[in-house]
Structure formats: C-alpha cells, structure tokens
Length: 163
Image (cartoon, rainbow, N blue to C red; front, side):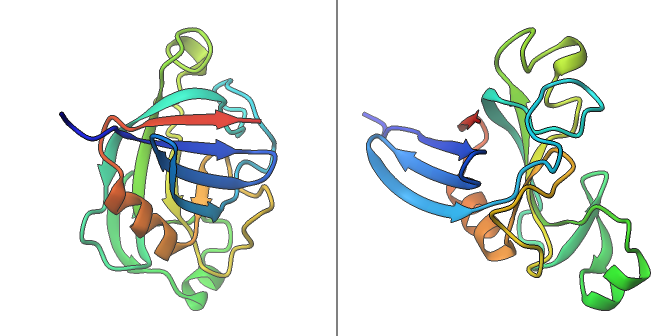
C-alpha cells in the first residue's frame, strides 16, 4: 500500500498555505496572493480559486535567489541592487510549482485556464511582505519556504485555493 498523497491548501482569506497528508499537517506558512483579489479570468491578475494540480516543478537544485523569466533561470541572482535596477520586474525566484486547473469552465480551458495564465507557487524576495495580497496572480512565498514545499511536493499534487 502506498502512502496517502500530500495536499496543498491555499487560504486567500488568511494568506496561508498548508500542506497535509491524510489528517496530519506537515507544513504551514504565510504567503501572498494577488493584489487584485481572486478571479479566474485571463488577464485579471487575480488568484484563481478551486482545485488545481501541480503540473510541473521547475528549478531543482538552483541556488536560493535564482531569478526566473519565462520559467528559465536568467543567470542573475536577486539582490537589492538588482531590484533597484529593475523596479517594475515581477520577481520569480528560487523554485516554481506551475499550477493547472482541474475544473473545466471554472479554472481550466477557455479564458479561465490557470496553466495558460502562468499561475505559479514561487519564491520571491525575502524582503517582500507576506500575509498581505501583493502578487500579479501567483502565490508568493519566502525562498526557504518554497524550497521546503518544492522538496515535499510531487508533480500531480492536488492544490485547493479557497477564498
């Protein structure tokens, strides 16, 4: 018999992410979801709700603060000087868990497709404030937390995002 799969629950109202297996809490941390709230529409910059799955894991063995653009390392490592040089950049750092919706017409396919919207759980600068909505739709985490989550999460892990 194989062990029960882990599940991730993202609670937008409390800005928390919890990982559990069966009825056991494995990990909990504060996160930041979309500054514009929840919603599924393409271009909304909102965090999509409902059931999702981790479709891809990106960034294995990359150093902390590796900068990603288009899901590829740029060769840069985040630091305050880089932020000052590129103040408008949406910083995607360290690791990426790319989400795909599981509910056709709600968060999958058509103009509501989470994966086509490039919605991730990803690392961000450690000086970004957690616990307050501030992303462009993704779920941001501190770098040490995303490494921990990445290491215990398999492709196919189910993710519930609730408001």
